[in-house]
Image 1 (cartoon, rainbow, N blue to C red):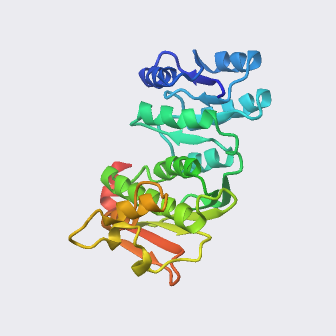
Image 2 (cartoon, rainbow, N blue to C red):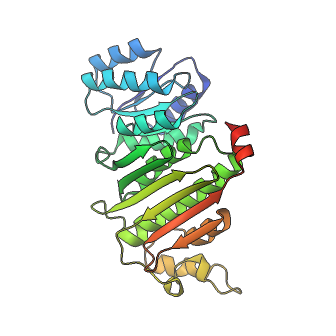
Length: 285
């Protein structure tokens, strides 16, 4: 398990993250700022660096370039005051491990950091196919950790949406993404899923394509959507028998939180569409 460096010893969020890491027996240190962080990296190895929540994304990316000149393999988790689509794309291109802006959830961030500290397969997990504000396409390896990383960037790309709209879309995307990785690729890290985020004036669209042979809705006995009305948990026992992860609510949750859920004929491609009130979106920016 590699050591973690937390930048920003005078911020509450940083201390809460540090406390959670210490409680998990993860070796970690605080630095008081960028110069101190670079000095510590020169003195000893750190596998993960968490930036200060008071910084800006462009400042963190400049720091990351300096850090990798010292420790090329370091993973960087960016905490920042705010983000723009251009900055999120720049973070993806810089192979930032994950990106967060307020409101921060220290426990969730610490949990991702803990998993990052023991992960050695991350570097090529997210490949950019096309990236510009309004249209971002990536290819991702089929690992749960990769899905969680991608969700941090997806959340930031949709930061200008009303909060309730954003939460609904992120919930739907996460479920569909995990379904694609599990059922389309059996969580085989050699397989990939393609994800595209498209923002129009009146909608947010996610397209997900997995490498599997597809499915027919009537064959999904492991999913909650196939349960008979008198037995809403019938799929749980079947999933346990087949050694599948807890869940099975993906299609049901996704269908209930987006405006349109459209599958291709064979079932290995899906569109998630959420219509947006332009006035509300502008007011939340």
